[in-house]
Image 1 (spheres, each protein chain N blue to C red):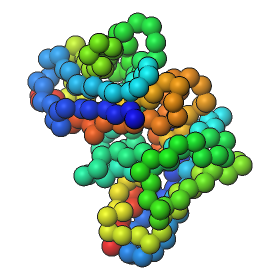
Image 2: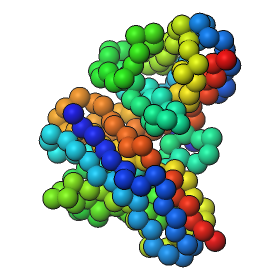
Image 3: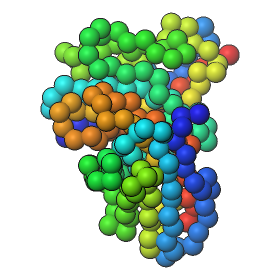
Image 4: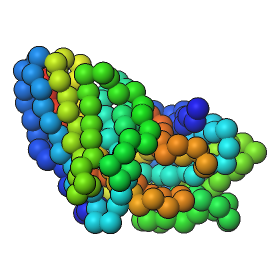
Amino acid sequence: DSGVTQTPKHLITATGQRVTLRCSPRSGDLSVYWYQQSLDQGLQFLIQYYNGEERAKGNILERFSAQQFPDLHSELNLSSLELGDSALYFCASSTRTAGNTIYFGEGSWLTVV
Amino acid sequence: AQSVAQPEDQVNVAEGNPLTVKCTYSVSGNPYLFWYVQYPNRGLQFLLKYITGDNLVKGSYGFEAEFNKSQTSFHLKKPSALVSDSALYFCAVRDKGRDDKIIFGKGTRLHILP
């Protein structure tokens, strides 16, 4: 168990809908990362937050947004969902030290039908 | 921008034989390098990392990796493969002194044949 908790584990929704994925980082970790894993695109970095502020941005679509709250949990919001958004979404967390290892949650499976 | 290449989609090794999973990277500065393993329907698990110092890094489950700066490589190795090592392996890189992005390779599926 990495200590990173993601909910829900599985989600099925229709095209055009909006969903929110939730992540609780490991105790004491200030950084949260979001990744998308799909069969054809591999593991894509979406966005990273540190102590509530956005630190780095990757290939995140404009339909997607994220935030990190004062209690350090994070949410990834996916809107106007398309079939191609079906994927496994991972949250990871780390401390803010040089060479920090990031620890992954078990992921949220999103299926858009 | 940093990048990672895992040139092999799949590697097949007989049980008991040594295994190598290849990784090369590109960064503008000095790298932090990582290996992760993913079992079916699970998250990624940390195996080992290179920060600085000894080029040979030892990690979990008997795995090790060798940092080669001149070849910009960080290959994962194990002297004797187990069937239970069959999984998807990811190499990742972070550029020291840059932003906090950690970029992953596409992954290599390792099959250990009994």
